[in-house]
Length: 195
Ligand SMILES: Cc1cc2nc3c(=O)[nH]c(=O)nc-3n(C[C@H](O)[C@H](O)[C@H](O)COP(=O)(O)O)c2cc1C
Image (cartoon, rainbow, N blue to C red; front, top):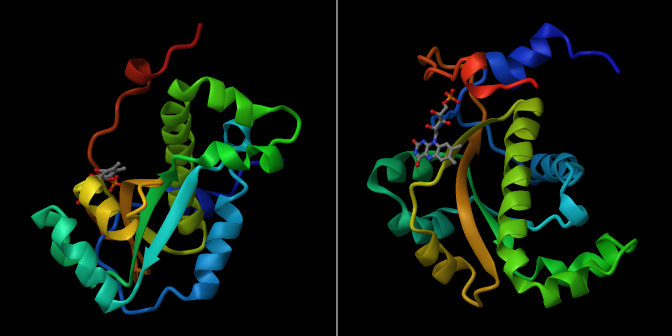
């Protein structure tokens, strides 16, 4: 395998920003399918894939989301072509017999329920990260947000209590990367240790 060309690294990382303001190009169901087909391949512990994705496009459903958003996130979320609530499935381990047949992982979690939430949050967060990069790879831009009331989003969209939301994303296309100032990133020496 070889490193991606500079233009690809630019699109995925060096020129990419968290974006919240998009043009009017719709994000079609076909694009959502392509996105999922990439995201599902990202590695997760026990191959558990605990993330669940609720894409919100209609005005009616956006209006249901709006009251649960931090006021600073409301207008841009309503205006975005697509919103995505990322949740984890608190019963993800029920599917492990199929997804990880090599080992009786379902019983492991049933006997050690303290492991369910940390495993779900770690792996669903990884999947959300994969999704941001996969979206960029497909030419989309993404604005992640934790400024919303997760408990009330769950009450509205996942009333049976099984799915727990933890991240909201605005998704759409932009004409060109905004020339916004990049927040400082930690210096290599501060974040990285090689021993
Ligand atoms: C988990 C998470 C939560 C965030 N929450 C918000 C938010 O509530 N509102 C907002 O406008 N931006 C939010 N952001 C955007 C960050 O501020 C942004 O990703 C970060 O400053 C890096 O900006 P850059 O991608 O342009 O370099 C969030 C990002 C992440 C990953």
